[in-house]
Length: 99
Image (cartoon, rainbow, N blue to C red; front, side, top):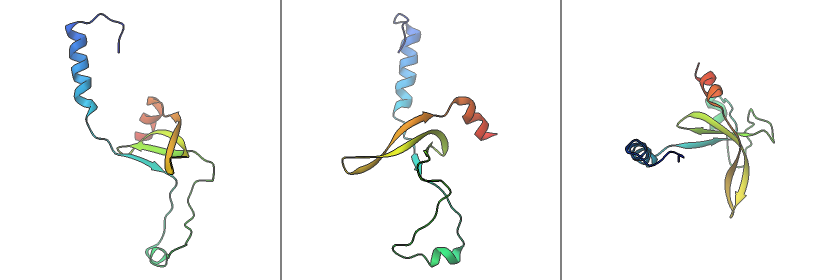
């Protein structure tokens, strides 16, 4: 936490932090996007390939509550997909995305 001695102020800060640690967040990892017409969606069938806007090898976008917070790469861990964070979006970048 902090190198400051344990004071009432530090205890209050810890209590405030502990309060928010149990708030659930929605994490989304985006491989890519595309736009399709309704007619094209209705014609999709098993085995169809949908081309996405990103190129193979580009970082995946990681969103928390719909806000871009990081970029990463796909990994497989115990036969499940995961994402390894390779870049955390700076606070300045996050502000630029909002404006």
